[in-house]
Image (cartoon, rainbow, N blue to C red):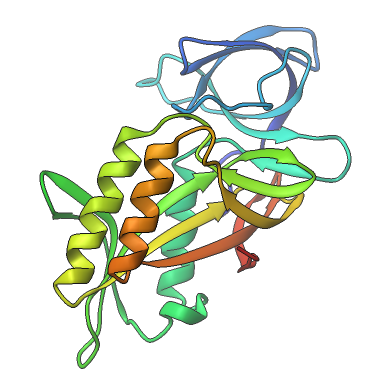
Length: 232
């Protein structure tokens, strides 16, 4: 997935009200960017952090910049926009690039299911069980090389696990797909200390047949691509 507009570098001044970030551009201008991430962004929102913003000239948008990346200034990046994983994954699924799911030819996003929910992707193919794929963006890393989810308590995520478990009980494939939006991690684990309820819900869902798939990403200021499977 390529970014629509060329990204520009900046330095973070502060993130606040979850969805706002004050930043300083390279030319010295201070701007406010939209932060499309409702999580805690633990370890990613320190003042002075180098970040990358996507400009826009859309008259319907109040903010003219969107925060897309954290630049760790060591060759590695973290993608902080939680809308990016579904865009990148849709392209990868339609192209058959994810080996575990490559047999499915029909990819439908945002399909209603469960109790007033929408599954990120419903994959269908004659002679195969339907595959319900829920996607989570992973950005937390507290140990070198280890990516963790979640970065804060997520009641919504726990609900999704319960609904995936119901699909598995009905004989469908149910996949919890974690997309690691960090290029500096090659391992994955659940952050049980941050949200014990989520970890327990995952264990219960896995016992019903819910599958876990963890994929890495290739990230640069040009875009985000789905990468290889990550150890978990």
